[in-house]
Length: 271
Length: 242
Image (cartoon, rainbow over all chains, first blue to last red; front, side, top):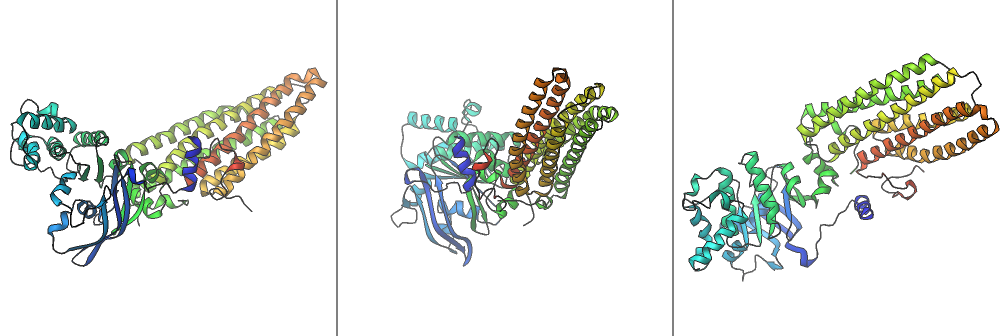
């Protein structure tokens, strides 16, 4: 144990290449441009399965763009062009044979502002399920209870599932949105600043939830809150101006980053 | 990634720069105070100056106060700034360093107490040559470790670490000659024992200076070399002076 700790520290190049059986997302030489202007440049990065990977970086560095690219949210924007590849469990998500709806079921996404649909708590969580397949009510109820429990919301809402989702607090709404995503049993959960609009207690609940969900799926988190990345993630990727600057185990990045640019950013120094 | 001594003055928050700068200044002040305590304790012994010995003994309280003050500053920085990377390592290194400096203060106080009891004995004291010899090395180690801290100089820190091995060797042979003195003349046992305690205290000061040097390597390189044989340290990580 001690020996490996020393090897790790002296080589200063901790592993961020994962064997195929541990790798969930494999991003290779990925470029993306908005109307010809490059937003992501030759990004190469592997996201390990059942781990939390955080993307950090200044505004406009491309971290949200990358997150959106992972479930092809840019498809409807005609000005976006891309090259290189993103593979989910070994399959290129841009292959012509890929069903985008199925891809988005497997790769769920949660945004900064909670966006529950204007319907009941129950119907919110059932929404994706109803689109996906016909289920007996009993079966659907079970999945809804499981999803709300996984999202740490069940105990707070179980007595009145038919209340409007809009009457929940911001933190509860965000957990409801996560439950809605979980109901269709995704492999990956993308979280774009999931707690930045929440108070500290709701934030901690979301962070605790992220930690607990790790055993079920792979999580990718975009955050401006450095302490949040340090608290919840296993791996941290630092992006700047569309490039991956440094990627490594969070413990390493936050105690002894390899590069000056990373050091400057996480410690709040001038570039 | 290595850092330099001015890298803690480049934060966007000027107040944070100032807090870290003050932390370093206060640590250096504590280091200076402790260095003086050791120097005075040895002078009190060599010149049989009981007044100076009492001054050293009483001065330890000030060292302790400074440790509490600096630890308090570190706690505040942890709570309010949540430092990361080299800032985190600086605050951790300072906390560890204050603990070593406080103990060096305790050792200086021990030397002063033994110097006082020796000054009361009428017999000539044996073993002072050894004390002088070792104290010169140890004081240099302490001075160099503090300079290394101030300049973020890992090369100088490694010199201190290597010097500690030499001091440990000298301490062993000095102890052997003191045992011979006691065997030769049983009337000298009380005074030789006091000299032995003094030598022991000096050897401990060397160990703490060695710790300070290790904190410098951690601070600058992010390498924790405590409990590592200095001869096995990676040449690239901690280069030896050619």
